[in-house]
Image 1 (cartoon, protein in one colour):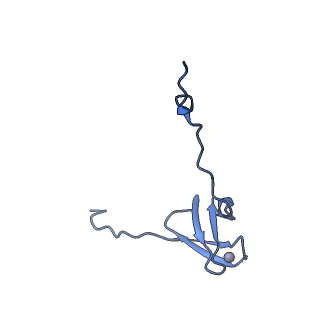
Image 2 (spheres, protein in one colour; image 1 turned 45 degrees about the vertical axis):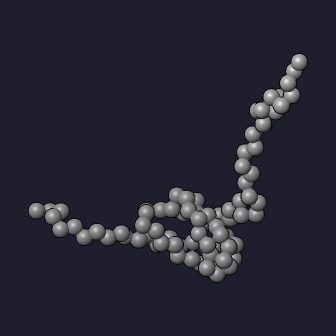
Image 3 (tube, rainbow, N blue to C red; image 1 turned 30 degrees about the vertical axis):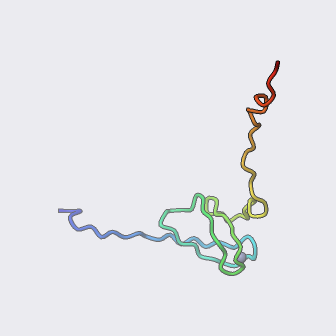
Length: 83
Ligand SMILES: [Zn+2]
């Protein structure tokens, strides 16, 4: 009976990349076939980079935090009662 005894294993895919900051050669292991999007920290320079379809990139948001969308206060006109 096939499948009666299944060995569960996660084959790791090892993706060789270069750190976009210090160009250190790194091996990134993932249980997926490829990394569509992921955030990693370089062990050499301790900076974060993102993996975008197996391509290492410098994250834009590491320098500045993205602003949470500021909504205009809707109750502003409520404050003044028109007579
Ligand atoms: Zn690095």
